[in-house]
Each structure stands twice: as structure tokens, then as C-alpha cells.
Length: 406
Image (cartoon, rainbow, N blue to C red; front, side, top):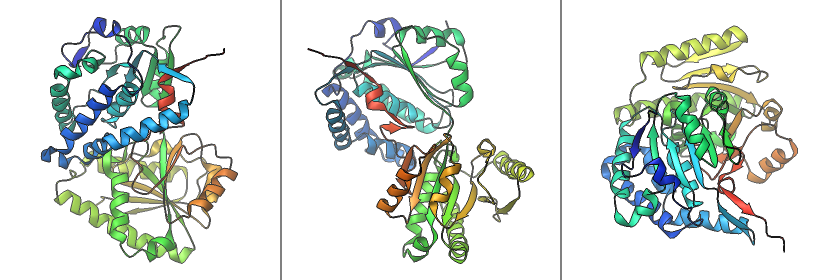
């Protein structure tokens, strides 16, 4: 059976299976995660990777303690214990997602087998270097013994092998990956969580944007949502909804896209991101023309093709799979945000908003009987990971409840 153990070198599948689970929020698990956070935040060379910095902030002790309070409050007087061994299958488009999946499971007390993407980036290699050093520390041996990070190709035999020893299988992949992995049987007592392909959007109230004094701050937030991970994360906004009257929307669009293009050029000059490749440019053209074949649209490319905009005349039967990322934005205008909700299927995940009143929006959401949308967040927080994701409370999913009826 052919698979590579990336970390830790001392752990084997046999030794991991022999371990017992930890208690939820065992102090050593919190200490390990906090140590990784401090190592990342203390390394000036890693400041060029904003995704790692954001992840390190998520791992800070104060946030871990907040997560523990949430866990304890939900648990109440029930008895929640770790499930056992969790097998995580992680995606290529968001290479850091394995950390969140692993750590939430670890905090629940589980042992973890993480199948890593074959994609290797400089930021992930830097992360592995830090993890390797931490896992070798004697005090972190309980974490080391319960962790196995592996890489292998699309090998059904290996997947089946891990699936027969795990108690929970977590698939962070696209629809095709889920379909393929689901054909591989689990042991009879195991269960599964899957995260399918999703599509996300942003909603901007035109008048609120125009009245904003510091528009550059809003652009920075939108840039972070859209351009990290090449706009290919499930929560990256690809469809922009403009709310307001026609004149306000037109004026807001002109200012917004001009400022965003300036921001993209600035980031490139600062080496924060690399220039888009020729294939990215071609993919945007193909996606734009493919959509134009299906429906009447207005294509609005920028001068340097850093931003490609397509104004839609309808959201009905929108072919979300045609979107290719890399700075391609679909736009749709409404007088009231609630007009879009009947058209959002289960494929829609995150709605990032700017300029909307929380109470008014909550009322509309509650009365709309939404089929789609799993998250509503402020603009700039679309990629901030939460323990509730795609409708799952992961802290609850990674534990089992012992029924005590006496």
C-alpha cells in the first residue's frame, strides 16, 4: 500500500490506532494549537502570507477559550466524548483548510488522519516546518501519537484502508471527489460529513457605499474576500448584488471597480500576489463567452483584464459551474435584497454584506424560507473560518453523545 507520511515521522497507522481518545478540550491540545499560533505570528517572514496570519489569529488562546465556552454551553448536562479516529480528506483549492478541520477534531479529543492535497505551496511548506518542530517536542507527544498527515494519489485501496479504521470521515472536496469517495465503504459503525462545491456572493447597498468616507477600507475588505486563494474558495464572492436605485448603483459601480483595480495593481507591486497567468486570462474569456451563449449578458472587462465583470439580467438557472475565479465577477442589481432569495439553491454558501441593517436583514432572512445560504457575514470576513460551516456545527459533529437515562 503506497502512501507517504508527511508528519510526524515517528507515528504509524498502527500506533495511532492503538491510542485512546483525549477528553474534549484537553489542555495539551489547547497548548499545542496556541504554540503554533505564536510561532506563525512571531515569524516575520510569514507576514507575506495573509492566509497563514489569519489562521494564526483564529488559533489564539482567547479564541480557543471562546470556542470552549460555546462547546460547554451547548453540551450542558449531556456527556459528549470524542468519536475516535477522524479521517480528513482535504481540498487543493484551499490548502490550509486541513488545519481547521484537524484542530476542531483535535479539540474534541479525536485522533486524526489527514490526507493532504498534492498541491505544494511555499506557505504550506513553511507551515510544515513549524509543525515538524512542534511535534518533536517531548511535551507534545500526546498530539504526535494521535496525528498522521499523509499524501497519496487517487488510490481507492488506500482510501478504503483508512476508511475502515476511522470512526468519522470528513470530505472537504468538490462534488466529483465526494462522489468518488462515497463509493468507498466505511466500517459499519462510522459516519461521514461532506462539504460539496458551493458558490458565494456579496451584497452591497449602493447608497451606503457612496456615503462611506473611507471607501478604500471597504475595497481592502472585499479584496481579501475575493482574491485570497485565487477567488476559488467556496466562500469567495463571485456574484455581486447591488441594492438601490439605478442611478446610485451605476455611480457606486464606477467608483467601486476603479478602486478595486487600483488595489489589485498595488498588491501586485507589493508582491502580495502574483500576476494572473495567461491561462487565467483565457479562462475568464471562455467563462464569459460561455455564459453569454446561454443568456443575454453585458461583458465589462477592465483595461488590463485584472477584473472581468458580467452584468446579469436574471438569476434564474444561473450556471455557477461556469465561474473560473481569478477576478471574474458577476453582477446583478435589485431594489430590495430579498428579491434574490427565491433564486438561491443549496449550492449557495456565504453572503458577505455591506450597508445593511442587521435587524432588517434578519427579518427578511427568517421570512424568506431560504433554500440556500449557510452563512451571512460582514464584507471582509467571508474567508474567516467558523466552527459552524455549511450548516454543520463541527464541534458537535466531531463528538458523540452518551445517553444517560436514569
